[in-house]
Image (cartoon, rainbow, N blue to C red; front, top):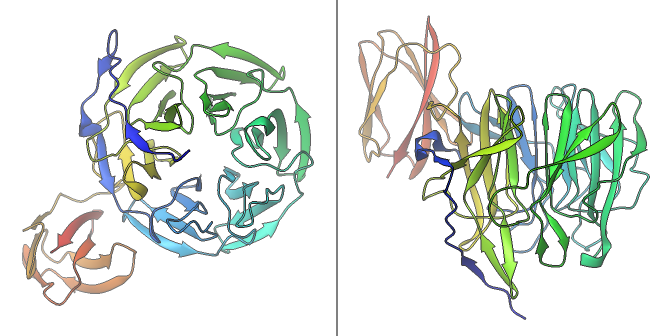
Length: 404
């Protein structure tokens, strides 16, 4: 039966605090077309996103680095494991790791690759000793990763085994099975010294709302309250300030996909779900997105929506903040008009160094503000989004503008 994607308008607000959409900001889109079932991980103050299925059905092997300080993406070395979707990514001790996935021949993998951001190179590590799979989930506790669940074929081939990978010794160890039984496309996250795994598919078009807490010391699981609302699969999660935010994803009915854009906040101290987070209207309902954390800001992007595959990226913080993280910011500066057609004016400190970049991070020009205002001719530039970075003795700050 042909599948259609439709929107479910679902309200679940009784007993919850509704947050303002001002917590969300759209930032630079992920390059090279929309995609879903990509992977992501964070190393230091940068994030890495790659792989996934593209609009033409091809499973990609590209990888990109996101720098939130200047809000730009940079192409990195391709993933040597080949085109893949629904792979699993994580990071430990300043290295990134990618394993599993389904390739362009629909074969599933058990290989593991380590990425070094210093050398921009990949190194193959010890292959996973269990069943090859895709749609697996992973959380990291300290310097070890815990990976499991997923599927090695169709719905009847969903898995529930869990394994620990130790990068220091490049070794795998079987751990206590996931007690929620068979599961694929679940979400996983870490709070303190505990890992969490839940939601996802427990069978063909059978989403789950259960979430389980893992104790590394005792190799044991404890169930926590279900995700509020309807059970769903392909959700994302990120942890900020000791609280987790879980949202997006989909449910099913009669071969139809119902996508979501809501988020819920979990407090491990009280073991309760406290707040319904309302995403802005432009953050489309979606499934199979990616998420990551940089400097206590959550990021959400890509995925499959009723409008097709997405390449957008959004930042979220419990407190209002700039769309770009600014560590040593000088006094704020203004850009006008924005959007602009022929030129933009920049109000800033005298003798500030002004640098112009494309949204892909390519340097375009550098100039010095002779007064407190500088004018930049953009009439010859292509339409699109650009970044301006101001450098002063106090530090630097970055803003975006649109050339129409």
